[in-house]
View 1 (spheres, rainbow, N blue to C red):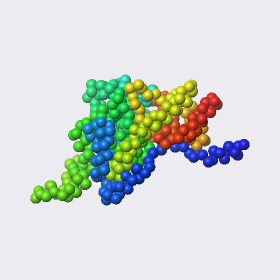
View 2: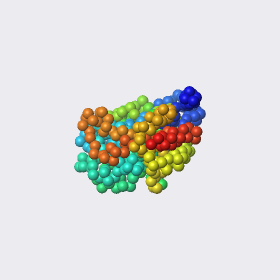
View 3: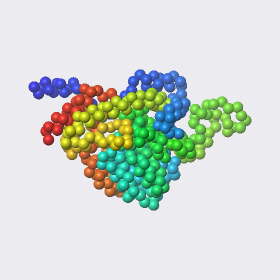
View 4: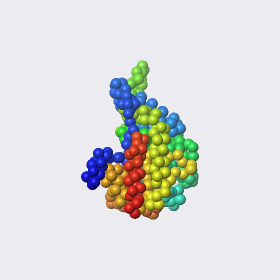
Length: 392
């Protein structure tokens, strides 16, 4: 019997936590760009920016090579730098704090709401000082942060809001799309995100001056993109000829390219359907796990529409369950170990008074969730967790 059992397990595939959903549409989109002869920053990037801005109901969108770049340039565009403080959660990916350090400012760690795992507005108020210049709330797992309260506090203390919507492509806050509600909103198109381009990011804003500055900063401070200079201009003024450009900022090489943008356009067309599938699969998990007393399922507030980027349960048996799932060839993850626990932040003296984060992160386990997850594969996860519960 043991040999038969092992044989059955051996033919099972390893289930990943995340998986991009791509097909012929993305292949055709990339091929079209390659055939065009223009694969760098160009017209496809502009097309993607325009379509994405319309989708999230924002006036402007600027395509970049990552959400990390989006966070960095957002801080630079706001003039934040040495001596300033920026309020960020510790339960997030390190880019939120890294970007603050890139500009010479200091990250101040804010605690989370235990249910949503998003920034706690009450703790935000406690952490504000005279040096505070901005706040970076994170839409954890696709669940929007309490934007009304965050923005009320920010307005009172003259703080700018840079919303990290890396998980929230397609999310809604009180019926409004995430992307047009904060001073700046940063999206990720990393390989495992809801809208995936391999790597990539976007900043959305309703402020033209901020958008224009970010456009310059993404392309080493050059005032006119290369593809725009291809236009033939008849004039005796050399400043009007296609070859001429000026460098007006100390910028970075952070721009998107047309190969990435072409994938993004194809993915954007599928996003609503893909997110509906995520929501359905998340509900299927909920229905099976709701009665289990030893774990807690994710909470979605009545005012929120989550993009369901991930499915994170809470259980005191997190590490034991992780090992059991691994034995069943089921991947799981932890999102996240708090930023201030990482070696770099410990060694450089960054501490955090975040008791909820300290308690809750030890219970978090991310289960497989992606649009192409089949019922059969999801049942493997469900059955393994239910069987684990019987051993407690």
